Length: 267
Image (cartoon, rainbow, N blue to C red; front, side, top):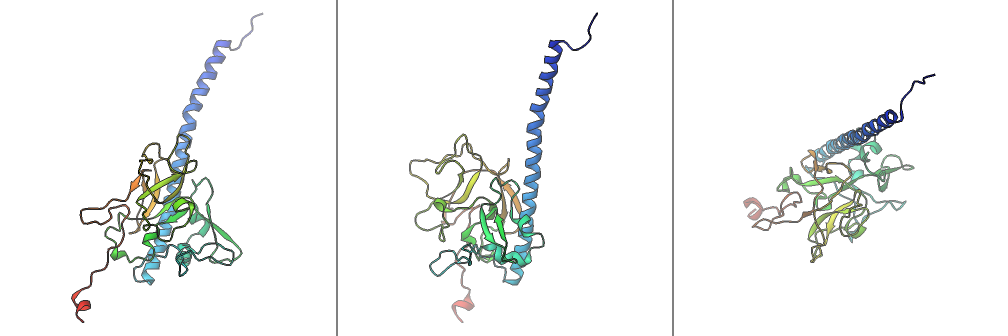
């Protein structure tokens, strides 16, 4: 009696076809997830930008403090030893749930900086975004390029050499770079995400290279600029560069000394 069914060759062909479809769908799914997470992260930054704009209306167009500092420049902390950051400045202007707005959905740590909730003392918040310290409490009109100056970016906790440096442009530091989760000084083939967006001393032997750079998101680092617009920057090695007049060029710009007008000079 003849038996009907798939031959071994047909079964093999179907298995190969299924594997091929899965191989196509998995990267597509990951890409769609990354697009969704990137969009959600940019939405977070837009909410933060709105809160900062409202803050500026009350504080003479001044940007928030990166963190509250002690007289020696070290960060102030609350009773639980947690840092008092820029979140405290803008929390009352935030319309969305704070935790949702401050946590990047693509952050593999779920928010590496832990701060006390500014409204509910018994709660904490996990923070996925870092503030560019040199722009702390700067007046927007003092910035030469506010639309090109990065103010906040998605990054993990840690500044120079893993610590919070209150004066990141002093002491011989000459480069802004992205750190990585598995290497202290340079990216490797196994690097998965950025661990810091901060000032670093560039080694004279040229240890840093722009190859194989990573970020939370597939297309780069989500950033909020000083003028309030958001965008995505490709993960790259960003060094401090100056023009012929010695002024810092974008995306890392600093306010120039305010020029005194005639009435200020000759009252």
